[in-house]
Image (cartoon, rainbow, N blue to C red; front, side, top):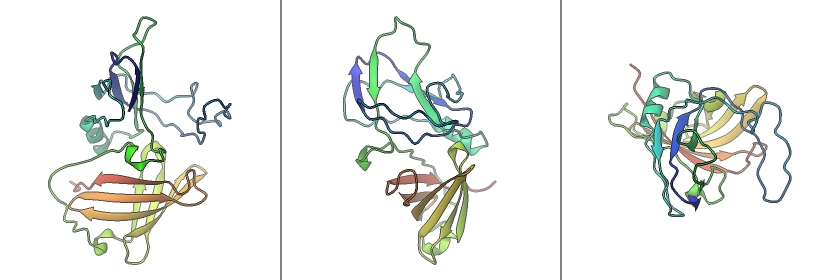
Amino acid sequence: MVPGGNNSLSLGVHAVTSPWQEGGGTYHSGRTEKPAEPGEISWVNQPTFDFSPVASFNPGSGAGKYIEVDITPLVMAWLTGKSNYGLMIKPVGIMSGRAPESSYGFYSRERQDKSKRPILVLSGSGSVGQSGEPGDLGKSWDVTEVYGWTGRWTRQGDSNVFDALWTLGGKQEKAVLTISINGNTVNVKRKQCAGSSYPGQECTYIELLLPIT
């Protein structure tokens, strides 16, 4: 996190309540960037959100530190059927011209230094009987992800490496995944393939397996 101004304003984490499409542009200081493509998120094309925050926090004044926020109620809502369109962070309450100036900066998933990228950590108790051995990974996984993307992860032989393909409308994203399971925790290391939006980019997911009831 990189702060500026003062730290008098707190931030809220809100559930996004409608679909949105991520753009492919990147901000460069001092340059004029290309306009957003039709349908992509922009200042004039934003999704709706739940005005009541699921959590709020004050980042404080220190720079270069991690901020941890508990969003368990939102994740549990997703797991029990609430549509998952992601989350957003905004100042708490309604802003006016009299509000004090606070500036907070957070690194994104595109940050070159992987140790500074944001992560979602899921934890729980119990087990669904997975041992983490390659034989427990199945042959393919069908997944539905945030923003409406659907994917199929197809296993390479008997390894723990999967070829992943996601689709949304006419768009496709490809990546190679390395999957391991420990108890009910799934660790997925993802590397984007050539021709994808961010070729060569790597990230790690930590997910939780839940028994079907």
